Length: 595
Image (cartoon, rainbow, N blue to C red):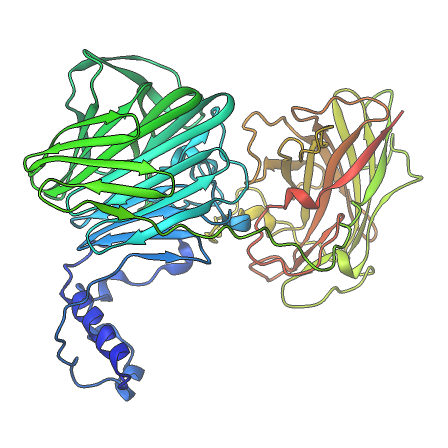
């Protein structure tokens, strides 16, 4: 550790705090690519866990520090995350952009860590190859607001205000017609969500709280509904009197008391828990729900060690939140871009810190987006035999996959059309899309059905085989929206020489996918697959209509563990790594249904 003035002392104080922290419980993670021997990792963390290389630069011992490490509140401008810290409490409000392909619809999510407990966690993501991936990629799985029972759209939230005066800190974020204001002080955290719209909406706020929880307010539970395939055991709490609903959660000798003040209903349901180990336990969570054009949800959270709750009651009077504690009554009021705090026995405080609105980025040069690739699909009076032959297909206008810019590589570049290429022929009727794909590939490498699992993280085994990926979806509507999510299938020829197997791809959201039928046969230059793909929801097949479509040919070679690359009809480029069996819906081409 080299001397660098204040930076060195700040780092030393942080390391002192890190090494004095209690051990963290070991967890066996599911990622097969990270099977490190956990029994060799020292707990708690210390300098003996560092590589011997560190001895070249490390001092014999940490330097003495005058002041212990005290983290400060901070607004991460580039990420749009506001972090409010006090002692060992951590509160964050997520604004910023969606985050691309790995982003989640969690704008305005609230995260809370205090007294060593991760009270309001971010759920993260489980395995990419299991269906609960869609739970972890939903707004309902996060501590974030949603409207009208749908996950948030892929848009940006903005932090409008942020300030920390040493005693109190606050942040305010906006996501379209919803704002969330968070204020953090010595003993508790205030959370206010406001909806301001021109028409009625249903505003919902999930609360995924750690620990064992109970509702202390007197009342009863009755059956209720919450439409989601991953949710069970839904019930509604009916209080005996219209008072704030108080929930108490206990974990690791700490307690979190939450006061909910709102004019709506409180639901409790079960859903998948945080994927921290080899099992995904189902855990309860709350959902606050209100209806209207202008609605407000107020919550006051008080983390404390043991049963030391100080808050007695919480009341909302207009824009003022009154919190009665054992020391008196605190009043908080939102006035425009200011948060006003009045605590008995103290001078009033006003938090400001308005952030300047950043105009959306506009490039100097606007380039028209590329035209999606298109091809015809011809109507048939009766389904083709689907025996691996071309019988029943119109062969005049094929889909061609034989260009270098259609190839996604791993190590080696595109080998050329003589070693890997394909032509496809599309037909249709009211029941299904019929597809014949003739692949040129001299040496086949098919993964037999029932083979031992490869245990490759986030990758279905059947992508590591010669075979196909097919995507179908309804075209964009008149409003210009992107259309319904695509339905994808991973199709692999079986080793028996004539049947195929098909499974829905891991990015297919529709659980009610149809059954793909078909067959295949070897050819002199490779193999040919013919399949029938049921039309997904939202597609109404008729002459002159258009559907979004894509065809991908996976390339495997004998003796390899992973596939070599893939040809993509809509255009490839780049690398095959980390794609699994997924395809970006914005890249899909168009099939024009010809009568």
